[in-house]
Image (tube, rainbow, N blue to C red; front, side):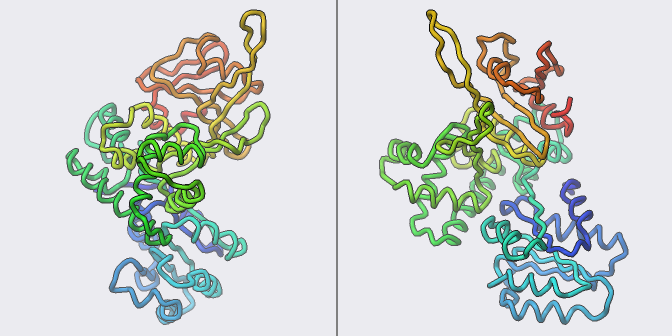
Length: 415
């Protein structure tokens, strides 16, 4: 069964022969290799590119271990290029190559070579795309399956599919499993692999602390936190201490491995970020469950995480918003902070998004609704509810949509 990743494939197709290194990044197991070696390879052959002009190297394969040497891999590639026709160089897990930045810069000098690489480490790849390649690196960020991609291979009703998607996430290896037990075992295996790889890559000697921190992050997913509050939560949950510097090091490691990401706190009226607090979300909702035993996280947390991930898949930057307002109590005005779950921005686009278990009352007493009424601009305001409902728009212009439709309809932000 083939899972189409047309959004990412089309990005690769549009970037062909643009004179840049195409760097495909994302968490291990999200489908980067499949995208490059199967879907993109098929596109190339269907476009008339002969197989001997497509050079594929999978560096995680031990049979190719010798090619992790920068001089040997360069020599190997140059020997494959025997004429002046176009060649496509596809390298999987390029971070295995020592000084891979030098290798990629060398490949840029081969005029008839178009280079594509994958990797699973943000600091080594995403940042180096900017710093090392001097504007000649082009990143394509790949995520686990969106719900619409998940539905393309799911055999069953949409509501049941949504329940499974929230619980087990969209990692392709998990999504292809049919039985609940197989999904849970696969997630547990992948999670352990992620943590061991992260610990080894970053010289973390106490792997148990890394695991414990993931427990803590799962317990506070979607809640405002910082290094100091994580230290306190760590102490209360695990009955042992850990310093805030180590917390920061570990969260940076997990972020670099694409396992978690951070939504900054944003003052909507002040149009500025507030540095002291932020929220952490997991790259895939199944990873939350894998660490908590598939029983401790509420559906609302999973719903919130899925909305955040969907916004990022669509190319939006998602921040955790807040808006200050005043309310009168006993003849006195009190200043009050109201939360906006997500402020989604992409270029000149901006959307304010709240999530709720059910359709909220459209009155000032409801904090979800009141925060929208306190925002002074006219950018679209959307409430996503867990249940399936017909899309509604009230006299304030606020739209309410069900989670399933929000995730499935690629134009759900523009209704």
